[in-house]
Amino acid sequence: MTSDEYERVRLIWTDLNGVARGISLPAGEFETAVEEGVGFANGVAELTLEPGLLDDPRYGAKAGDMLARADPDSLREVAWADDTAAVFTDLTNVDGTPFDLCSRGALRRVIEDLRTERFAPLVGVEAEFSTLVPDGDGGWEPSNTRCSYDMDALDMAADVTREWETAMEAAGASVLGVHQESQPGQFEVNVEYDDALTTADTLVFFRHAAKAIARDREMKASFMPRPYSGEDANGLHFHLSLWDTALETNLFASDTGDLQFPAGKHPDDESGLSETARHFIGGLLDHMQALTTICAPTVNSYRRLLPGIWAPVNVAWGPDNRSTVLRVPPELGPATRIEHRVPDSACNPYLGLAATLAAGLDGIRRETDPGEPTLANAYEENHAAS
Image 1 (cartoon, rainbow, N blue to C red):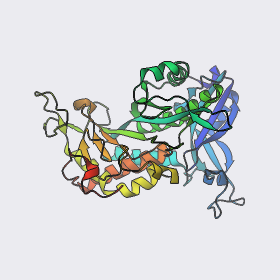
Image 2 (cartoon, rainbow, N blue to C red):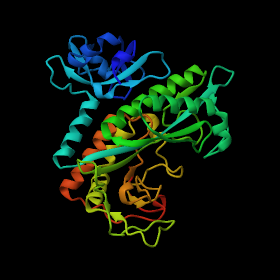
Image 3 (cartoon, rainbow, N blue to C red):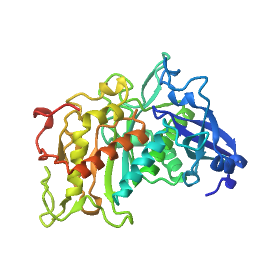
């Protein structure tokens, strides 16, 4: 794919809150955006969610510009807008040095740290969100009255879910599945794993796509962790694995057969977790309270983090255990991965992944012992809170 195939290119970066910002350019300006970057007042990186500027910003009216430098490898089609592509950017100072509030740059640096240890991180995501429709009184209500995996809900939303899938496929991302989540109007889209930076870009793109496509249908796609009263709780689960740099071997996998699963496993299955995976888990558990501040970043986030609604509030890990902050899914061998369940739909994916991978790398370097996994209901055990 090249920019010559399009008339317009959307140049995208995210602020610290993970809000997609940028500019629409004629496609003829694409090469300049790659080679020289496009200038923005650096203070806009500190915009709040209200929206507005911070009362005491680091960068203000006198602070000058930052440059958004397009990453040509991230170019992708915007299927819901005619003759339009999108490209993701890294923020730099005018002199070319990294801009300190660039969350995409933070993730790049952590990936490079991992590569110095000969690790390549691959990440998949489960994106949960709520779809709302006008309630007739000027407000919004859930788009359906269904619950978990209800097939009628898929039929009712077939047109919009197909548009989401088509948009992601046109952008080069693989959607593994779409289903109705546990609460009315709540959906989950699973995105196939890729390198960590591409996955973060894909998630930002999906949020953009889901909102735009919903608006075209007079709906709203909300990525608030708890957007309306009820039990809805929109998470953003990270599925994490470390591979060798040739991407041939999953370094979390082993043949130790050392894990027990609540629903059992095949009697001949000798798969297990490597020491690298265990130390990675140890690092995440060791830093979990700090990770929560980044991965569940808003006041609304803490309306999700409540016991009893399958929310991750217990600093523990367990095989196929959804009452813990870290779950080991039962698919082992090459599919071995760690599911980090704390991130929510308000999380800046670049910062969330950067912090998570850095914590795991710290655990590997320090050989942190994660302790024993729990097969019990962690809500009923004595664990630290996330």
